[in-house]
Image (tube, rainbow, N blue to C red):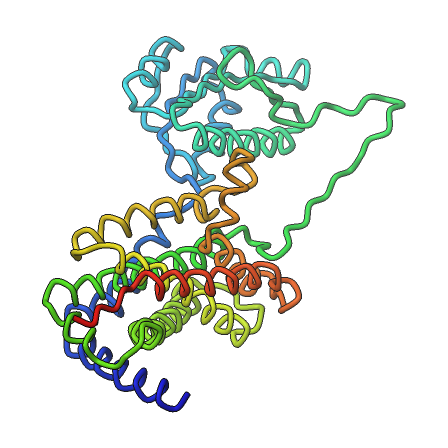
Length: 388
């Protein structure tokens, strides 16, 4: 065992010196993930703001202008055009200059005064289905709030949206259920609290996997691998020594990312950071082991990069980082169980946002431990140590 550790320490020290002396590699490891975290955490959002909206106000009364102002004041809509007919509003949708058209009929205020009910027409550009759903939700909330303020009921009429936008009036003699909502874990509904931990996991994974995937391939290209093959270093010692430096650097990346997440994005850290780093230590063995395994099956750094991007693209899209796994087809949900990124994204969010303990993250952690053992075994067995 002492001989094993001594050889691993000697080879790992040489690898660390090589990485530290290479300024480009150090910039890739330290600076790039932080810059990407700052940019992507603001770009990857579930919130939609400043949606271009065209208004067709056929009523032109104080009430209709108040409704339009309510849309503008919400911060989710910008009135980019005012048309005089529904046909012109539809043309704006076709041209792409508007995402939503709000049409207020000419008897809007009169109907509110006479019947205490009113209808508006909402037309949405539904090319981006998820975005259209979010915009429709915003519209529903604004109409319901405005209807409560003026003591009436607002609903859309024949348009692209045909759902009621406010609760129907109570019927005499029929019990009414009062529904109250409470948001747990993220009461302010700040999307950054949800996205930043996942993005940080993705960046650490990408940097670590890409660098380790090119590691042995680089040794093959420059010819130093042949020199190492004639030394008494075993395959397990070689793979372990190649993994350790990047494992420590990835933990450093994670530490710096958490500092940025706390100071810049104010991400809550409800759980134990010790538990988080313990889980990260296991996960990084898997992520870096996959990179080393890729490095053993390719011959050049270019091949390693292409294979890594292929693997990472599938991992990220099936990790639940950008789209909920529950909304995916059943076979994709089953396949995602073999995705280590999915499990650590779940663990990171649970610890930071929910304050989960070891019992709550035990299942995904056990899966990662199994993945780590399998990946390291594959990498060690794949690395053929030639003695000639």
